[in-house]
Each structure stands twice: as structure tokens, then as C-alpha cells.
Image 1 (cartoon, each protein chain N blue to C red):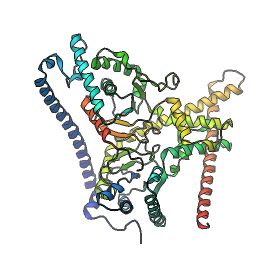
Image 2: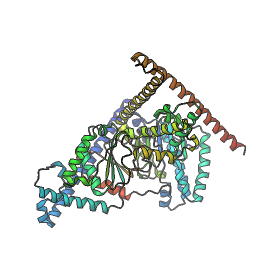
Image 3: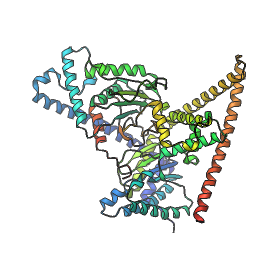
Image 4: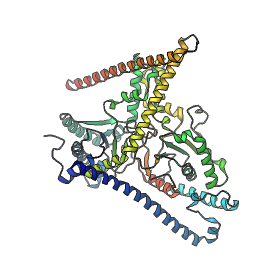
Length: 296
Length: 290
């Protein structure tokens, strides 16, 4: 049996989905699934039952996303901070998550799960990876840039989320995807996660569509800034290089331009090699983890 | 069929627009109505004082510094004490409030008003941000405007509030946190991701020079480094002005636990709207994983 519940949308839902699809749709949606505990308290049931309902709601939401042609979903399942909760609850939650997500793995899904995650740790880890590259002699410290840092995050394989939804009326990000959502549409909804409906999702998407143009503009502006920054950094490196090697003769513009082009090519090659090496390092890490699990 | 869907989608979007416009219009109407009611009640109670000019809700619409000096002084003194008591009556106040302007064509006077109100209720650190970096580019104008609005709103004691601007890292070590005066900082996207990148470069350079191993790098190390370079505390509250629902690159490292509250526009924004946002912040509970 499939975990992502099969089943079609009803007629009205399908019609509304088609209307929404006439506009720009988010390609990647992130959820902070908040409110399981409050839901359990409200219904006078155990905390773990609330979490169970939350996982079921996730399955349902993934089905809606599928019908709405949203190719990628990221969820915040469990923050490192949550380990502060009672042991019973944490153990129960871990077991529940293990079951549910193992089932999901079988389905080869488009879901990223952030588990025991904080964004600050992710950013720090990216910095550590770059420092590792420097140690290995793959890159120079001056090659560190915004785009390289993005490449070193866990999320390097997916585009930044277009839409971030947080439920249960909290209005903060709680250390989730801080770097990746800096130009995303952020929607705070007051509904508790286990009570999330198709219409809540539609509302959030509509809000995204309402914001689409201005956010696209802001992203474009940011990209321009980034390119400019990179060019300036490259120029500075070339100038330093020429000053160091040239015998204090003024360099003509043509040679300077050539040197710049050459430097950019070299830098790009270095960065590519580094990213390849990093990928291999990560793959072997996961392979070790996997074989460690199979052969304890 | 596709055409019909497209048309309906457009209609839906128009509805959202209308809805938003209506909400912000109602907000203004309600505020004016409530304001008038409050004024009348006050006038009835304190007639003599009211003659000298009691808290006037439309003050920013006609900031007239040429008023008779005593009247202005009287007015601003009573305003000041009201703002201060408002600040005290709140359950909690943020130490650092971020004002995020997500609108084109910023209005300097309104931003200056907001900054002055924040300082008057007792917030010690106010930052102003827009993703175009307009405020940063024109920070002398911003500074002048803040000083002027301070004079208009608070009376003459300008020296009490210190205004400080963040420039590109050149003057970073001149001011330390140990300051009881409120601080105003103008932030731009450069203080966000780019400052994280600079910190990363710094760390990588020290690794390059074999002063440090990559394994030593930790969250707190990066945090300390970022704090040293710009000295920006984490904001507890960001008030966002404008119709765009995004942080637009505002200090990604610092907004880990920041509460975000939206107001429709910073143009002609009133003190009551800001106070409403602060009151909402006062009711926010942070359970931090609990």
C-alpha cells in the first residue's frame, strides 16, 4: 500500500486546482509542520497521537502537491532543539518518523526531510566544507563566495523554496532554511498542522501568486548584486596578482582584461573540481552510513 | 477551458487585491474613529490641558516646528510620558527591532517617525532595512530626518538619543555594545549574506595560513565572528511594511528566532499601528522546542 494516499481530488477541488494552475505555481514548497502537540491537547489525546495525525496530514498534503504540480517539497520534521523534550516523546517520535519515512523512501519521492536540523548549523557546516577544500588545496580562501556557500549547503541539489508555509499561527522561522528562504514568499497560517486542509494550501499558493512579481524582481536585483560582487572580488585578486608579479610597471587595459579572463577561468575550474570532490566525499559518507546500518 | 481558468485566476487575484486594500482602508478608518473618540473623552476630562494641546493623533500630518515654544514643549512632554508608559505597560519589549521596508519609494519622514517612536517607548536598538539599499545610500538624509522628527515629536533634548550609522565595516570597533543610549542602524543586503561570506572568507584564510583546522569551525565561532564585525544583536521583532511577504534578504543569520509582523504600509503609519505590533509581539510565546 502506498503511503502517499492515492485518490483523486473531488470536483470542486480539481476545478480550483486548475484555476490556480493558470497562474505561476511554486516549484518548491517548504512546510514547518507546527501544532501537533497543541492539536493533541485540544482533543485531549496523547502527544504522540497528535504527531501521528501530523504525519498522516503530511501524506495527504503531498498528494495535494502532486495534484497541484508542485515537484518538490521540504518539511521541517524535527529540530535539534526538540531533543529537549521528554525522552518518551522523543523516542516515540523518532520511531514513528522511522516507520513513516522508510515507507516513503520506497516510493522515490520528491520530499526532503529536515531532521534534527538547524539552519545555523547547516551554514556553519558549509563554511567547514569550504575550509576543508582550502585545506586540501582545492580552492583558495578568496574563492569563497555566496554562490559557493550555497553549493556547499545540504540543499545544493534543489532550487531555493519559492514558498514557505508555517502553520499554527507562530510567526518566526525557528532556525529553518534561513539562507534558502531569504527571497521566498513566507506565509504564516493560524491553522494547526493536523487540521490543515486543501483550501489552506490553496490560500497560501494564492498569496504566493499575489507576491510573485515583486519577489521575482527582488531576486533579480539580488542576482545582479551577486554578479557584481563576484566581479569585484575577481578584479581585486587580479590586481593583487599583477602588483605582486609585475615589476611595478603600469599594466595596460588590454593585458589587465586578459589577466582577468584567465583568472576567472582558473577560479571556475578550481571551484568545479572542489564541488566534485565534495560530492564524492558526501557520497562515500552516506555509503558508509548505509553499510553501517545494514551490517551492524 | 484553459481560457476560463486563466480568467478566473485573474479574477481571484483581483479579489485578493481588493481584499488587501479594503483591510488597510478599514484599518485607517477605524484608527481615525477611535482616535477621535479618545480625543473627545480626554478633552472632556482634561479641558484645561486639552486647550494647551493634548496628544494629537494627526501630529505628523502637520509637523509645525514654528509653534509657540511653550506649547510644543508641553505637548511633547506629555507625549513623551505617554509613550514611555505605553512601553512600560507592554509585557515585553524587544531589545532590537528591525524595520523592514518592502515598498518602493520610501518615505523618510515616516521611517524617522517610526524610529523615534521605537526609541520613545524604550527600545534600545532600532535597525532600518530595505533590499535596494536606498537608506544606506542616503543615510545622511535619513539621519537628518530622524533628528528633525525627534525635535518635532520629543521636543528639544536631542542629545539624549544617540544615532549611529553602520558603514561598510570601517568604523566597527569604535562603538561597543555597552551603551545605554538607543542605537539606530541602517542595514542593507550587504549586512546579510555578504557578511556571512566575509566571515567564511576570514575563517578560510586562517585555515589557509594553518592557524586553524577546518574541524574547529563551529556555530558559536561563526556567530562570534559575525558579531565582532558588525555588532548587530539578533532582532527579537521585525516589523515589515508593504505588500511583499518575504524577508528580502534581511540578516539571514540573525533572524533565527525573530517574530515577523506585517503592516500594510509605512506611509502615513501611525503610532497606534506600531503600538499594536508591539502589543502583538508582547503576547508571542517562544517555547524553543518545548
